[in-house]
Image 1 (spheres, rainbow, N blue to C red):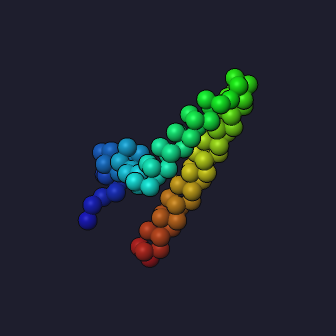
Image 2: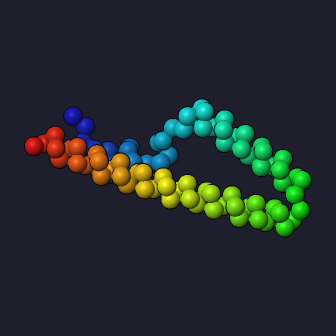
Image 3: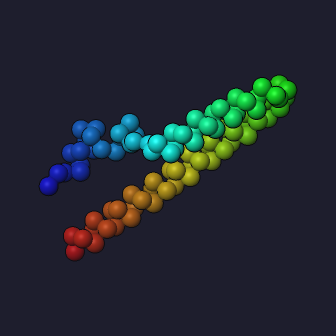
Length: 86
């Protein structure tokens, strides 16, 4: 059995570089970038600034949401491990 503690210590697990994003995610992100560039071509500088702030707020909210889901997942995983040992 592999030691998860050693896997984390040696950087083999728990490393965000090791997370493989799906093809669907990559396609959606690419389309979103293309649409943003297309929209910004038609915007005034003031509109671009507001839109940029809007996009930043969405990105920050998604990052916060991902953190919350990750933390909950770790908690559930630890509790499952504890229960399995009893």
